[in-house]
Amino acid sequence: MRHKYIGHLSGGQKQAAFIAMVVAQDTDYILLDEPLNNLDMKHSVQIMQLLRRLVDELGKTIVVVVHDINFASSYSDYIVALRNGRLIHSGPTEDIIHSHILREIFDMHIHIEEIQKTRVCVYYHHGICNPFPHTTAAAASVENRQEVTVK
Image 1 (cartoon, helix red, strand yellow):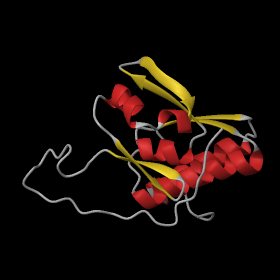
Image 2 (cartoon, helix red, strand yellow; image 1 turned 60 degrees about the vertical axis):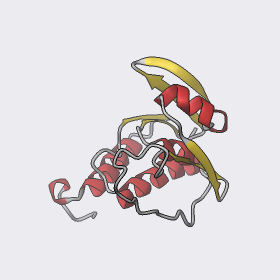
Image 3 (tube, one colour; image 1 turned 90 degrees about the vertical axis):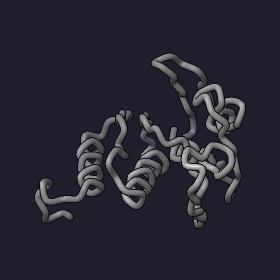
């Protein structure tokens, strides 16, 4: 990646390059607005793992806007939840990731499963909120999940 022009990089590689540019500025705080947009799962996880390392290893404070509650649950220390531009809840991740609180935020039932010490939000489940009742959803297993948080 080091010898390529930025225009020749994939979306995930571009995001990593942009984050590297921000890190090179050596600020204590990094603000990112939807850094996972248009990225596949692999690159989204790589970006979140990179941000986690910046917090853990370099002591950065990172504020990230994400719309995927499972990325917030897996990588955040603290969640600020907005709905229609208004603050609904804020607090440590472990205080926010509960079905009754998520119902207030998202106006829908979200079942919580704990997998390897990480709360996973199951917001699509056949029979609970299936928008296509005559189809079957494939299930994915979550393996090798690490407990991580962002300051």
